[in-house]
Structures are given as structure tokens and as C-alpha cells.
Length: 280
Image 1 (tube, rainbow, N blue to C red):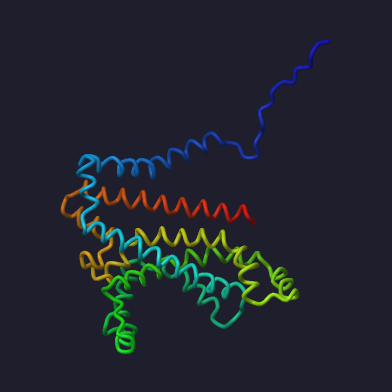
Image 2: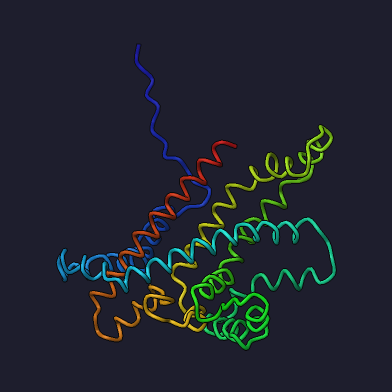
């Protein structure tokens, strides 16, 4: 009995052009992302391993890296807390000037970073509208200190957390919260066992975006930081200084450290976000 041979039929796609689209995507990513990153990774090795190590382990470089990553991490944690409150308020409640407050959240996106830095340094200077009361009441100096760096990074990173959480909160509904309430759960138990697990994956994503934005921030920080070496000098500013001194290899060496460290941290956060999503 002759076997029946079914001819191979190529799967037809609703939208044609997958091969062309994929080729264009790879070409675009290579030109815009991969090639510049490859150049950044290759350039420092003109110094050799010992030269590269010496360039990234000087006390000034280490201090700037600690400030950049430490302040970015603190700002991301602050934004993760207050971002939940702001997003929850904007989605769940109706109140006067809601649209105005919602527009203010996007202000760091539209405002030039240099303008934001000047405004923050004016507000938090020792004689500023907010800096003077903080100095007189709490003897707390914000501008031209590492605390000023954290304030600037909180300002630029908050919208990432808020805008990531808003769609998730809007889709949650209140049925699960009402069911937990009827079963006798307290408000804290409802938040910890019903609301927070549902928000956790989006919250981790928003926090990672806020951290990534803060690590490389330059314009809004240099005006309020004071830029004192070993005290309030951020790594992006030190890179610019080395470029102005024509130390391109030293500048790219710092950039490689920031790139690898940022990638490792964001990759770990993405793995954690995937783990939380799978648990749900």
C-alpha cells in the first residue's frame, strides 16, 4: 500500500515581511546599541589590564562610583515606596486638580535636566525656599552634599515607577480586596497579602527603570551636588572631566565599570521580576 505523502506547506502569516523586519531590527540595534557598546568595551584595553585596573581603582574613581550607585539605589527604594502611593492615589481616587497632579508626574520627562538641576539647587540651597527652613529647624544641608544627589535622582526617577504601576492598579479591580475584607482581614493584611503580591512584578520593573535612569543621570545632579572630589562627585561627571583632559581610555574604563555593574543589577532585578510573575 502506497504511503500518503503530505506536501509541506509553509505557514502563512497574517502580516508578511517577518524576514525583512527582523533584518532591519538587527541592523538598527547593531548600529545604535551593539557597535557603540563594543567600542566602549574595546577602548579601555589599550591601557592593558594593569592600566585598566589602575584607572578604575583610584580613590577618586571608587568614591564617585560609590556615590553614583549608592545614591541611585537609595533613590530607587524611595521611589518604590512613594511611587506606589502616588500611582494608587491617581488611579483609585477622584479629587480636584487630579489631572494637574497627573501632569506633574511627567514633568521630569519634559523638563530639561539642566533646568531641573538649577531649580533644585535654588530650592534646596542654604538660603533657598526649602533649604533655609531645613537648615534652621533641623540643621540639615541638602544642596552641595550627597543628600542633594539623592534628591535629584528621586526627582528624575519617580515617573518610571508611577507610570509602570498605574496600568496594573487600574486592571486589579476591588473584588479581591472586598472579599478579603469580608473574611475579616485588616487593611495591613489586605495590602500585604492581596495588593502587594499583585503589584510586585510591575513594582520591581519600575524600580529597575528608576535605578537605571538614576545611575547615568548628569544634568540635574551637577548643579545640586557641589561636585567636590571624594565627597559629592558622581561618576558621569568624572567621565566628562577625563574626556576634557583627553584621557579617553580612562573615561571609557569608568564607563565599562558602570555598564557592567548596571547590567548585572538590572539583570538580577529582571530575574527577580520573572520569579515573582511565575509565582503568581
